[in-house]
Picture 1 (cartoon, one colour):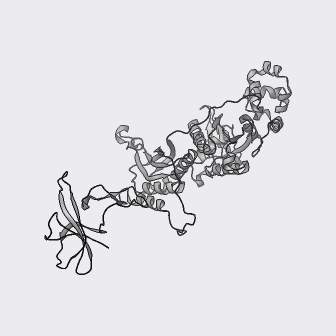
Picture 2 (tube, helix red, strand yellow):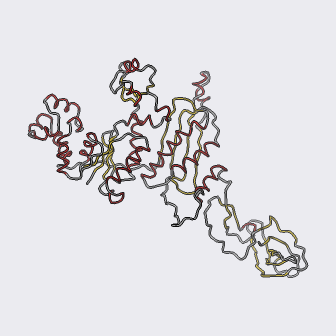
Picture 3 (cartoon, one colour):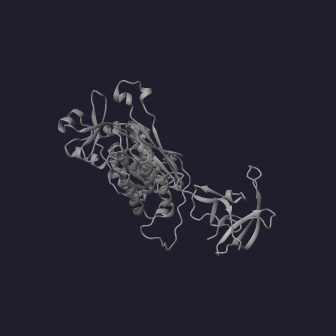
Length: 489
């Protein structure tokens, strides 16, 4: 087996940074953690690091060095949500995905190479996707999962397929990168042990007495001398992602950036599980007016969350198309109160079947595919504004066609006798003494069950002016007055 490790060295920072607009991400900010008496920096973005800030620095020292720096409390739940999203995305490239110790994702890629091509091509695809998702990363490949993690921490882009080469490269790796407990790393450093080859050369019995049998098991899994069972990730059957704002939003344009981020995440998740989405909801969580005004009970003043439903006629996962449809629906929705968070929830995730395309597509370069045009018109005009006529199993002409919002490009043909293209709303007398019967009669006798009973003999006739009409007489009457019901083109 071959394992690829996607090391995420700044996962906590990425979870915040990718939710910020581009201009906000370029200003200095940092994540803080620790008890209230001793706040320290967990991580800082590039502008803050350029000013001299670094992880582990006390918050007071950081604020003295860079006054006015924006700080945010670290929330491990945001890290976990991003890890789950990335695991769902990675499922697109391998069915064996596991989460490793909070800062890495492991993929078994030996079987994936036959599908996606050689490792350099697969690695390039992984990096392109991660950059598009706004994730800082390091990637390495090795015959063992732990070995891939160590290689990714030591040298980005390393790829080994042979166990002998892996042991030789691991020997050069620092012990601090071997994913051992910090207490063991410090104890080994005090003994003068810095590299794994020094640890490999020591007697195993002595290492077991000094550090326990767990160290030997770890080293065996690292080199591939012992099995390394893993619990693999399985994508859930629903998608839910939330972005909370640090300020109130009262207008639609300010919601477009977080909406695009959520839609891109949804698309990555759908691609990972090889599915599509046919209906999802945008939930606008409003600000509590009682907190703003300070004089009304909370339960009386807080408006309910606004829910914008985005429905499609067919499963879709293209991010640009999903964003366009969601934006059109969102712009038609009023915002009754300031918005503090935006949530995207998708529960209907049917299989995705790509639309067939002709080898020689004669469609103009700027023309939209039929499916894209259909969904755009529905999003802009409303759910029921776009429809087509579909056959209905009722012999009466007035009831034979119904409006159908489930639009298809080529509806099935109606297996009926000749019908006019222009059916009048109601029959009217046809006064023409030179009518010529072209075909008929076609007797229609139906409607007794709903009170609309009809008994008619229909004919295709030609008028004295050469027009083809569809007219009827009462059933069984040969010389009665004609009633016009439609015109043929």
